[in-house]
Length: 359
Image 1 (cartoon, rainbow, N blue to C red):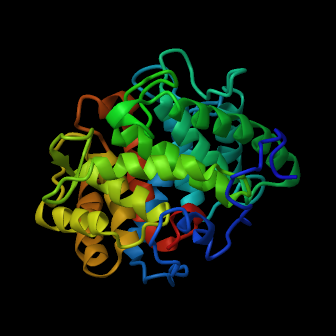
Image 2 (cartoon, helix red, strand yellow; image 1 turned 45 degrees about the horizontal axis):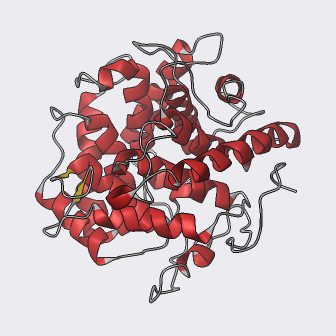
């Protein structure tokens, strides 16, 4: 048994084995008329030595700056989201908990996150949000498949409650926000940013074998599609203007939830081609994470141009000590640990070690 909490099975997606190349096949049948042609995992693209060096340097900085508690430094209270992103950076490079290089860093981070789940399933700290919860759930779903049996059992218990909270919170959204998520589980509105993380968390849990309600996926996709701009790109909320970080989120959400090469995703890719990222813009590191993953999913010219530009800029922006420095006021709350984790995750896209982002 994968998850310890008994979730009802009627009307749920069938169980999917971890790392199965066609893991989206069951999810894809949710939407009428959607092609069942699910692309297999791509072969690794050549990774330049200087990129490997930048990744190693960034992970070295994270290793040196992890606290004894297992967290990574923030300019505000220690946050599960920042610690989870840092752990994912190591997993994205192929490092694992329990054994091998950096395993102590990974183990401490995972343990700290596991210890910060509230009785109702919410993974957060005082002042935290659904960002903490969604990102932490994504990280735990990725760690689940490479953990030893003892750790896997602990992760499974936490994941079961975390997924149940995500599903319950989705039911609170109303009207044009129905199907999405917002900063807190009780919110009645939604935004594409929080929604993206919760959908990825559900996809990651499905990869681990969790049974996810078909309606939850369908309703989440419907909210993302309402954020799509008629001229390309995705808005923060329905009716708003498109933005680069939001567009990366929208593309990735649709691609991961089975809507491969949809009109909205392709239009979003064209938007990113016509509006390249700038290191001086707000939420730059958030955008490089999402846009690099989105470009990988779309492939072809989108990967070559969007990811190629991101890679070049990140190499140029890396500090001599291996870290990256966020310039945006809100991103500065996460400090260099947040920016470094996001940069490494973007640079590690060609490795395809994280099953959640495999095509």
